[in-house]
Amino acid sequence: MAYFTPHTLEWFKALGAINSLQAAATKQILDLAGKPDVCGNCGDAPANDYVVVGVKFDLKTDATIRLCSDCRDIRSKMHGESFSHLNSKTPDLKTAAQRAETTIKTQWKTVAKYYTVGWMGPIEVVEAQYSHISQSIATIKNNISYNLPIVIFQSRESPPKSIITAIPYKNLDGNPYNCRLAITSKLSQEKVRLLNDFSQAFWFLIDNELLPSPRSGDELERKIIEWCGKSLIRC
Ligand SMILES: [Zn+2]
Image (cartoon, rainbow, N blue to C red; front, side):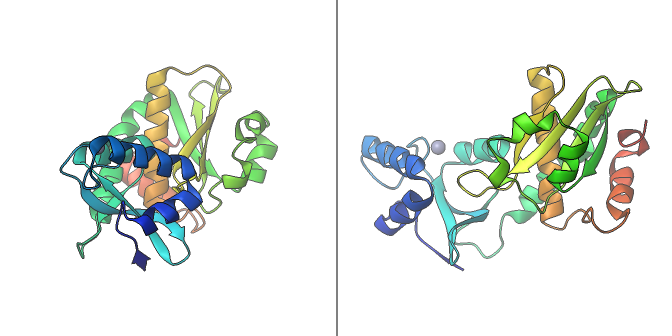
């Protein structure tokens, strides 16, 4: 796979073609910093060059980015992006995978306190069963990550008082792990963050084959029980 060195003319052209806003913002940062050898997000130095894992500028070119370590960490957390060092042979996938696994293994207890977790797909089937999601997905309908399952969180009363549906979709950069939550009743910011983090880690691990595919029988369910315990997925 080819790539462009961040902040070069060809790189700006490639980024501009898929995300003109980000290209313009980066240009402004570099102008303010007065040099290209800085973080494209905040203008700080030192900054490193990364391949954005799973994102492409076009069919033949991996997306690349120059970031300081703070911005890299923030983007990983906020957008679920993962980065591998541009010039290193061992990609950063391992770190991202470890982080995702830790998220599932530590946050499931908080999730399980309020909800049971299930997964379904494709979106048409989910929409037929949970009509409340139609409005929430209207603006992302063409960008839904079809290869990933929809995560369903049901509150623990029977029947559940609240059902939250987490739908994965691609943003302009092509990152497929963005999370749209369709809710039936209001959620606190902490719960939004919790369910976002949990869903994104779940999708990342499935997409990178570190968790079994939901299409391979009950293997995924077995693995989740092994990692988290039965109470997460059963009432
Ligand atoms: Zn930065």
